Image (cartoon, rainbow, N blue to C red; front, side, top):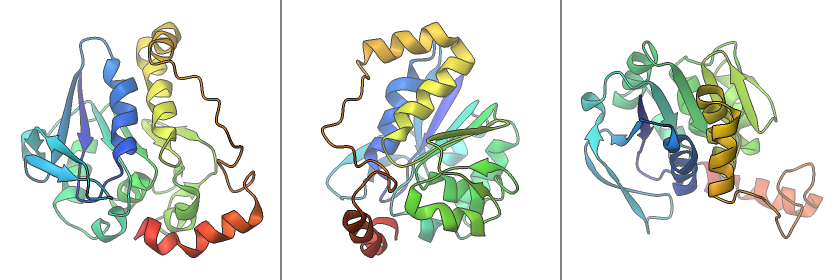
Amino acid sequence: MQIAIVLYDRFTALDAVGPYETLGRLPDAETVFVAEQPGPVRNDGGNLALTADRGLADVPRPDIIVVPGGPGPLPLAADGPLLTWLRAADETSTWTTSVCTGSLLLAAAGLLRGRRATSHWLALEELKRHGAEPTGERVVTDGKYVTGAGVSSGIDMGLTLLGRIAGDDHARIVQLATEYDPQPPYDAGSPEKAPAHLVELVRTHSGVILT
């Protein structure tokens, strides 16, 4: 089984690394980082690079597609090489997945039309404009499409799909081995839980976060 994790300029690192550390532990699976061209790709902060092992053209038929989010997806939502590749690769993929605003790219490619999906909470309306049915759930499965909400949910998305493919016990083993036992120091991880003034502050700066 081949897992293709897509990289593009200004992706969010944890969106890619979370699924890599969970879903990438499928038995006998090959995980490859792909981009329009092979080579280093910078994250949204510009201070970290992951290396794309192969170009999009080199990976035409992955079994699993993982599209991370980041400030980059909105400019990329216009037709171009990435959306063309997503449409073609999706025709033969077993699973097509995303984390955070990566779902905007799937939606822009026309893959989520009429399907339930999630994204970062600031991007749910944009997801709706692309024809998807947005939900605030952390992980959403609709057919072969599995979408995760904001950044950290990529770990949950990876474990969810890992359980579907390799069984619950294997997913639990990976959860235990990675000691994924969230105990956050604050209970402000969603707009429903965070203080209202902080929600508004994040909304005010959403142009920085999602563009």
